[in-house]
Length: 204
Image 1 (cartoon, rainbow, N blue to C red):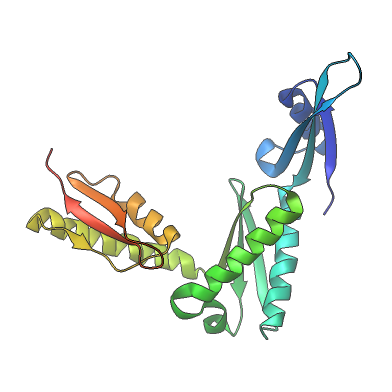
Image 2: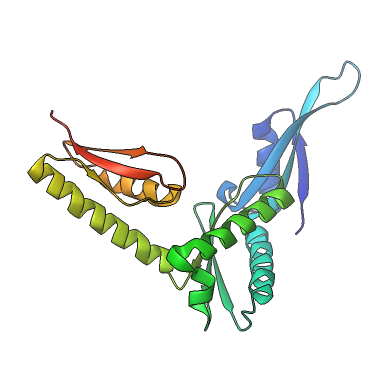
């Protein structure tokens, strides 16, 4: 993965140079910045190190391919998509159940590993999603649907309901889904790995 360095008196100046030289938009790169002294009595300069998000996606795909091969998953096809600075790796294989694991635990562990490997390589935080034939997308749909169904029941009964334990990502999906509900509050309670969402009725 090729890295590019640019400098300027300000971050904006250095970034403008980078975008022009690399012929990209700002959402197509990630960068780290640091301040350096130009020399005695010459002030300071901003230096940024940039990498193309498409190159990061290629590297993430290579790392994921290696992980899958070590798991015994051979003929996996990995589709890479980049949108709004998010890299999504969607896996297609004959061993989907093995990759996903019970309740998606293995898939989540793979995603965590890929993110850590890429963040170490780029010295930056990159949002990466690893999915298997849109499994997570479908799970999000069902989470949202079920959460809204429970919220409507709480509105009717005025009684609080505790949902099953969820991961932090799943809880965020539920909180977002219920954020537009009037007279409904959703709060996370408990300790990991048994942290769960409680849905309650609230008066105006």
